[in-house]
Amino acid sequence: MTVEQICRLFNIPGALVEEKKLSAGNINATYTALFREESGAETRYIVQRINGYVFKEPTQIMSNIEAVTAHIRAKLEAEGKDPSRLVLQFLHTDEGKNFWQDEAGNVWRIYYFIPNSVAVDATDDRNILRNAGAAFGAFQKNLLDFDASRLFETIPDFHNTPKRLDTLFAHVEQDPCGRVAEAQPLIDYIAEKRELAGSLIHQVEAGTLPLRVTHNDTKCNNVLFDGTTGEELAVIDLDTIMPGLMAYDFGDAVRFAANTAAEDEPDVSKVSLDLERFRAFAEGFVGALGDTMTEAELDSLSVGAFAITIELASRFLDDYLTGDKYFAVSRPKHNLERTACQIALARDMERKLEQMKKIVRTIAKS
Image (cartoon, rainbow, N blue to C red; front, side, top):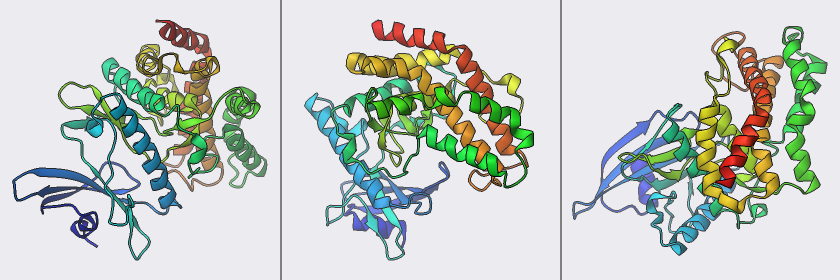
């Protein structure tokens, strides 16, 4: 089916005057569609086909998105705020669904494009990092009273660090591709830090850390900013919304935004945690949440950055040991280099862990 035909199923008025496929994002197929009504009013929409190979239960994803965006919208309206620029608004079919499934099983969805909004890729701009932190912090705050158990776990054990490490070490024992020997120093470090990396999940199991509604892909480019003022607007890319830990959302953002090198930098001497970038993101995130976090959650944030970095290192390494089947690679030892980069970052985080905790505590008290 054409994009226009899909749009008609969502009862979009007017004539299609522009359609464009977007190259950003490498999972879902994404298009923009501009419609003009007889009055001359124009509205732009984002049209997406969900990747059914990556997301096995797309209707569950859309159920999660419906529940979460409706909750945030109601919260914003109760506070007297205009939700049209602060949360994604998905269109519905005549059946009241926020998606449509074609005969081939493809799931389509449409949401309003937020005018004068921009996304920003990796940056060291402190204001952008602070505003990105504020966006993800506000996302968490608006969902603190949402029962996370209502949500489908669309990717089971996505951030279950102990299980990720169990899988890695099972493959270390098997050594299916004969690659363990060259990776042994990296394996040894992960083994040494196994307890610390899994400590947050153990706190959940002990009941000392609560499960929240989490985004699970908190890169800066998943926040829309006002194209004029740079102010944070809406959090986007909601496919991975699930029950999870606030610390992992915070930590994954820090892992990406505060690293002084790309996540596959082969020269690990260039890799470190930039504490000023860390501080900027934390100011936005912790500042938005205020005193709504538990003491345990506040203490968990910095450890979350370390844990998620070890987790990603284990995933890269596991893929390398089993033949590079999951992550796309552009050179023979790409996944091994990615692992080494994340381990270098984790080492620096470990050295700076007390400084990170102090920064978070200072922000929380201010």
